[in-house]
Length: 253
Image 1: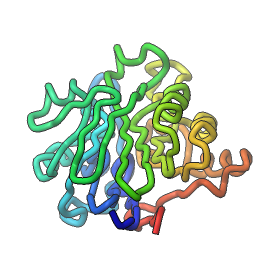
Image 2: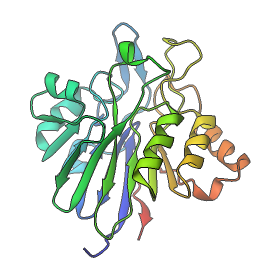
Image 3: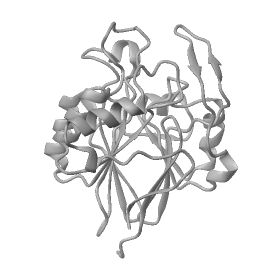
Image 4: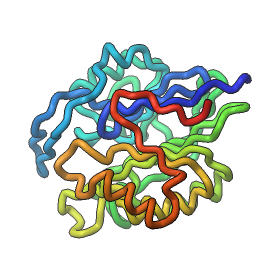
């Protein structure tokens, strides 16, 4: 396969278009306008998407880390799912949403020349699954292309270390950051914070780090500026690529 440009376009929150090996992939679709999602713990969306559904266009594969929280799959995102060629997520999501293909950790799905593997993720501290539910990350591979890791809503550095050991070289890591915290587990965050994102980056060798899901919601307890400073103080600033919403970020020419 001839290597093609690897490009990420942040839509907002966890939602990004990834152009990879001739495929157009979309992470965790969220296209609603700002507003409040009522529930056991209300979530407040502060910023709308930089791109609308029509601007995103056709999508070959949706990588859905989980379906149970509206900051990862909202109303407009659910309506979008049937437009995608394939929707990959957890087995639990497949039970709840028609047309979703559920993958267990390390199970793979091939779409053309691209192999997509589900990888473990933990949405909070140890034991969080009982309250937060099951989530998944993904690893993309294709002949002649960089290896891409998409963390999903994962807070565990230990799982990142396990993924790095098992996968081997990872060229680009899309990390869901922002230190999401709704108080359910006290001071323990639901996603990576600046400090644990640095630890994850170190576990990933020399991978380029692209933070997403780090802005736009009230329950994110750290800013992207804090993340940038933390990477700078850790001597890892040269590995961090911060996307601007709506603007394609070329990661590999």
